[in-house]
Image 1 (tube, rainbow, N blue to C red):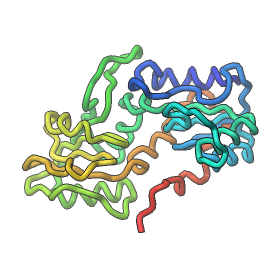
Image 2: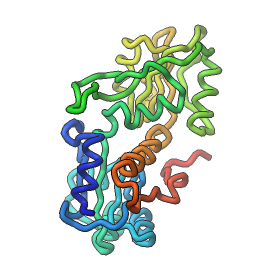
Image 3: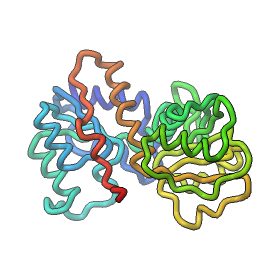
Image 4: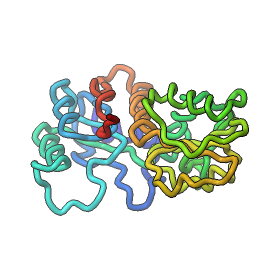
Length: 264
């Protein structure tokens, strides 16, 4: 198995060509011709994840967030990114990230959120185009609950579905919640799309203070960046498992402890 084979399977699911402009979806470290004997999946490529890959016999890592996202002028092993780069190069570990490509496919990040909530009639929230395999792509998803809930019940559903200790919300609405829009990670720019789609509630992460001033009859909820995106790890693992059922494909044993944000 080669790195190129792994990339081809991932990009059939989430084509790199649909990534957001200036994103860095794709191969971060290594060569497409490099031999691969095992793949480890995680959300972020950290030094700890690279060490886990080496210890478990994996010579490729697949993550959602790119290790190299912005322009890098120096690689300092005393810094988190530099430490991960040094560890990967020393260990001969290739690193690939499926970032906004996996955000934009409906079976990806936002679709996973919709499934957690049990939404039906799920569609892309902000369509941008059509995939070569068919179906729309774009950020976010919107769907309907099987039955209407009160705002308090919707909050309880979200907390249970995502295993949350707390949830940041705008004031609870008085009317029923039936249509919910979701977007993994930073979704504040899609608030208008959620309202236009007829959603009574929009769930995402990284919401700024001023964004919580929303129109009457609409509600905004912030579950956190990690919490809304971590589901993509298992999805990417499943995609590869379907293509290579007898290959060594492992999910990080520390995925539940990988959130850099702590709630005290």
